[in-house]
Picture 1 (cartoon, rainbow, N blue to C red):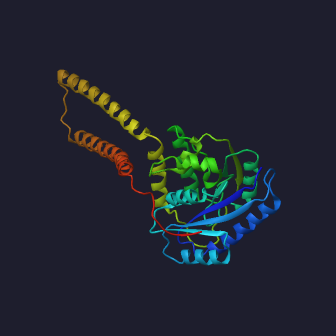
Picture 2: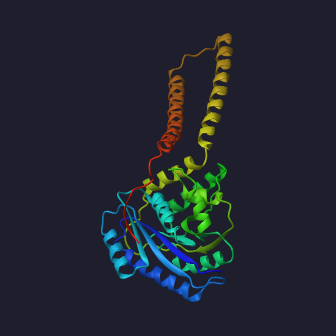
Picture 3: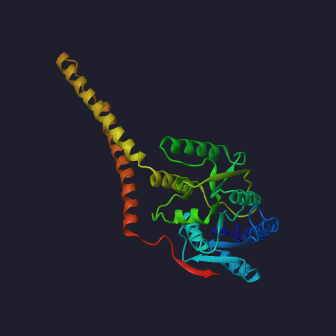
Length: 318
């Protein structure tokens, strides 16, 4: 196999406390890969691309400093905060121009970067996509562990292909990335799209570690929004569920009409305020929820039709 280039893409948002140490550690790992030369790979070249997602701290200043110290460190800066998924897409779009294999990993390195050499070996063996998969969730709180497992089960029931316990730590070949970038949608849920690409896949298992510094960029509110985006981006099952609920409600209404007629014939009609109000509030709630779900899909369609850019790049350090 000819000389291959590896690029590690790191989305970063307000990571000044940890970025320098993370980059130095990744450079060491790249050097180990180049020295080892995975089976079938000779003369591996490697670099790092950091995507600054509109950070408000010294993150970009540190990226520029790292770039001056080592030309293997590249940088891409957004004009404002666009989000984690657009940052990944932008990094892949830029790195795929020169890279043969690309690894994405978060700046906090909670996903084990020491597994990257194993990913490269699987790539050399013919895998176009190598997933980093957590082998346990012992480091998570009970709430986070339970909700995560429930989320994966829900998506599976809705017919969504998803790799359980896999985030955005993965290796992809050049052709796999190019195929992913052919998907033009603005509301892209990358974790759900990649399994649809159809390329040969492998996996490495690892244990997630706590952050060495800084705060998580995914509080509960963002996690819920991210989960909902995943559902609405990959399946129309919620809309179908509304149809089912509406059908059931109509059948129940027909049953209640028959019940009321029978009571009227038998002279057992009882005038009740409570049952009427409960029914009105229940049906009103169902209708509002239904309109909200449908509105969510309409909103996403509006965004796609407008065809606005996913992100705006302010600066590139090459």
